[in-house]
Amino acid sequence: MACLELGSATVLPIAQKAGVNRTTAYDLLEDLQIRGLVSYRELRGRRYYRCNDPRKFQQMVEQQQKTVEATLPELLALYKPSKEKPAVRFYEDKEEIALIYKDLLKASQIDAYGNFTKAEQYFPDFPKYVEQQLRRGIKVRDLVMRDGTSDHLKSLYNAPKQELRFLPEHLSIETDTIIFGDSVAMISYGETVHGLVIESKAIAETQRKVFEELWKSSEA
Image (tube, rainbow, N blue to C red):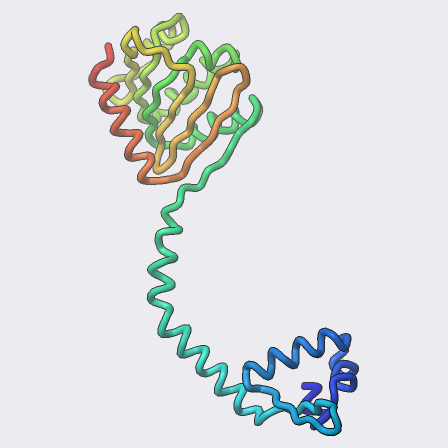
């Protein structure tokens, strides 16, 4: 716009008109020259810049539009896989882990394998959570290590919609893996408690296959 208004001018008046410093003006004018929007002529050792026909700008934009339209199918093809990238949320303390269990109360179906005793050590109210989950009529299949907590809660499961089975004795599990919808929650009860929720249909389907194999080899 400064070049158009000034007609033919050196860098300093263009920079002042455009409200930029002289060095920036040089860089911008060089870029506009490469794009074919600005040209210059030298007179007595000084460069005088002027804008080319403004219709050149229109032609440039139209060409860019054609380029975008021509490459858009390829760009979309590259973009689609990014939608399949799993979304991962991390949880770092007991308060945040409690949010995972709270969200699970909204699920319609849950398949899980884990360790009730470990969960109760960190969350004394964990049995109450399980009771609440079952009372809501959520379809549940739990695979757990046999312990006092699981024995106590087994009578609350209403088969065939809600079932609890015991993992083989040789399996010692320190984490909970919970599959619901297209998501998988994994909660570790080690020296510190932490967890993550992965939203991925492919990962959820893979975990369900693992769960089914464990389910077949577990004791009712």
